[in-house]
Image (cartoon, rainbow, N blue to C red; front, side, top):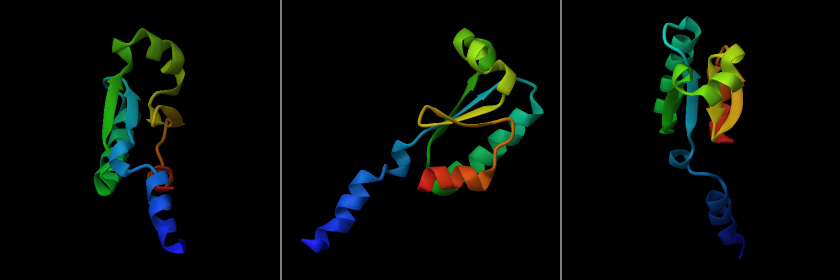
Length: 95
């Protein structure tokens, strides 16, 4: 029975390809460009998919996050805003 526990642990942890990082950004934003570079690197290293959304194209995102751009979501939950710490993002995606 004890031999089964690693399988249970592996099933409970979310597979990296099932995670999603979302960058909410706006055009011409240098902090957004910096954030995107960190996300591309960390997600590329880990094999985690990511996407970006343009805050100017979505009134709801604009209302919610305008003062915090860029905003990073991990699996739909806010992870950080303004500056992205690569190590912190890596930890969030591997824990």
